[in-house]
Length: 640
Image 1 (cartoon, one colour):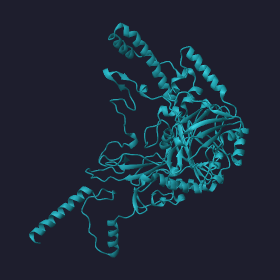
Image 2 (cartoon, one colour):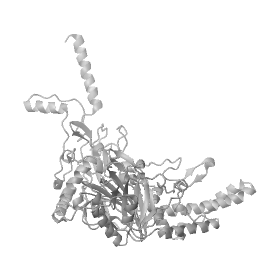
Image 3 (cartoon, helix red, strand yellow):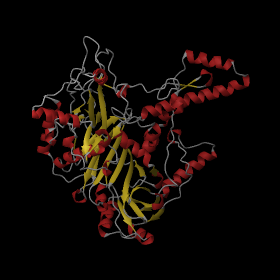
Image 4 (cartoon, one colour):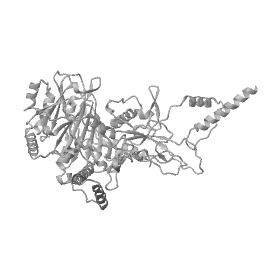
């Protein structure tokens, strides 16, 4: 059974058994204003990191509404204190959004007369061996090799004093843990030590943060600050407080908000962590700040498991979709790859219309990679630490593992260092030994740090309206790993499976992405007796195009109804009514078709075609045209 038929059957089965549960998630908080004008949310990005019993959550909503002070209110677990809250720059969440987004890729048929192995775009060796970039050691003056781990940035970077947020606490004042932390620092300073671990070090450049204002309850906060709290919002927040949660309020300074367009702004991420495992978020609150449909993107990082929504279910969209290269949009030619966000939105809506109340699962991959092809490099260690890895280091990793003993030196290493010492003055040798010992411990620490911070990155996405949200979203580890959207095309029909399958090899992690593909048959000459056709790989050297991986990002803000997917998708997907899209005929092709229909004789072009390529070789066609033109010129000169 072909891949498209298998996917169609599986999709139809999912339709037959689809739950009629309400549609999924929302922002896990609510907006309050002083002027009574509603502020709404169009999209929210939520990053969750888990290890053992510790969870780190970063929430980044957008904002639609007039200028003026407003506040973000989020219920959080009772052990979340002010020192457990940080403000994360938008760029860190934008990186993980781009890395996990649907992507467009072009496969090229490799030279049929080249017997060499096929290489894919993502298999290129991008390392600069002379400097050790992206791997290997770096060579500095004197030929000394320095391990690449020393060049890695391990600093966490947060947005604090310049942040648009001013935090307020509603509930028990978070002073106890702050005092313990201050006491610990004071004692360490007295001993001449630094209590801040290098693993989550990172000079924020912000200095000490001012403590938050505190209020015993919502009513006193509203009265003191002048915020209006409508009855439905007060009732909803009270329910979470009665469950033992506290309320974190982030007052927004509009002068520091990044305006994207019109009245829409993009807020920074609010990060908090808890030693109570966070698997449920107060997403029903988001409906109170809804104004139409919202897009919500969940990204979960876990050391070895992919995660999934537990109480709403999900469906996989088709992947490895074969598309046209160019389509007509409002009468103009447009490259599909440049409109991949709009194409995916149209397909997303088809899927969700037939699967009401379900998430759409869009990505699952190990953090060592970033899909095939990658839009850019995988998540860097400082990005992982900023998104929550620093907390996981401190809370879940024993001191001995954070600062391991370096491995024993080899004989070669000993001899090399002894040779260096001989070239030094006696007074320099003691210091050199100290530096060498410290470097060996630091190298061992950094290597262990990099090895620990490997995660399976999962992404699932929902689009909902306010009337559909009935229960908070629960997330948790999935029972299996998955594979899809990563295979290499085969044969003249460049066959690829559209479905998602479970990983059968023990120990193998997920490799799943949503990928759109386009294919270029070989357009050159074949000067060999037995050409080997239909081997698909990287772009031809003579093909001059912008070397960019096109990703479906900013999905919440891209058009959804300007592109009809039936005019784009060539893959057979009967369940969605897609397949057999054909390019619009060019002017010359239309004229040829018209002549054929009228019975007029058609002139045959002179040229050579590669089997199955479907196009005249441009250089030969040009040469033939030149010869015909030269012959006509000679006849004219002869008076013929």
